Every structure is written in C-alpha cells, then in structure tokens.
Image 1 (cartoon, rainbow, N blue to C red):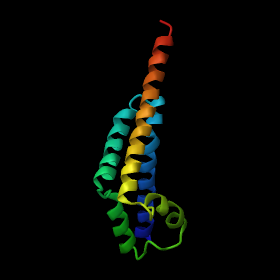
Image 2: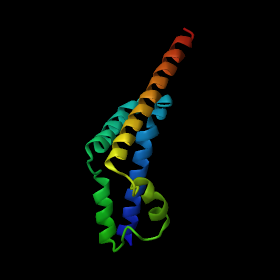
Image 3: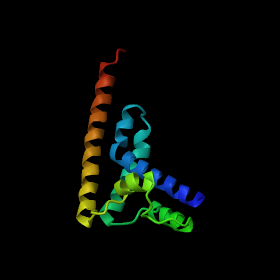
Image 4: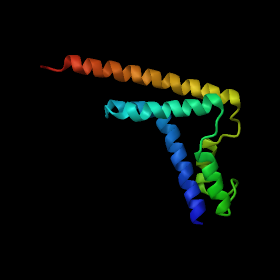
Length: 127
C-alpha cells in the first residue's frame, strides 16, 4: 500500500514538473531568481522530448507500482485522471518533438515578456 501511494506521489511530482516546465517562466515575474531554476528544467524537458529519452521518474513510478502490487490499469483518481496527462496513449515521437518545440516557443515568449516588463519597470521607477 505504501509503495503504491509513493508511486502516486511520483506521478504527481512528474505532472508538477511538466506544468513547471511549460509555465514556470511566469514565476519570473514574481521572483527574479526563478529563471535560474526554470531554464535548466526547460533544458531537461526539451532534452527528454527531442532525444526521446525516458524521464527517470517514469521507471521509478513503475518500479514502485509493481513492488506495491499495483498495475497501471487500477482505477483510482490519480490513475484515471493524472496518468493519462503524464503518459498519453497517443504520444508518438512526432508529437513529442512538437510538444518540445511548443514548450520552447511558449517559454521564449514568456521570457521576452518578462524581460520587457522588468525593463519597463526599471525605466519607470523614480530615482
């Protein structure tokens, strides 16, 4: 039971990382140090997508689930709603590359916005 719960936690962390890679640049509007965390995450995510590598969280989740006596087809909330987002069935190699390009493009746009926003804020500051 504990190992299956840990497997669910790994899937949630995996999903959180995916969301962070896709949208974490927006956090740079609040915290100036965030690009130092987010840009390496983008590089890692892009490397996995472009090269077709498997994220280490995937085999960890599988190992925990199997050792915990579970299977990927069990019907709890995480497996029905979160797993299909992290591991979509129709994810082909072409879709992986497309998603990688899309994530990079979105983040280039976000960082261009953050850079302009900060530049304008500095210029408009009195002093």
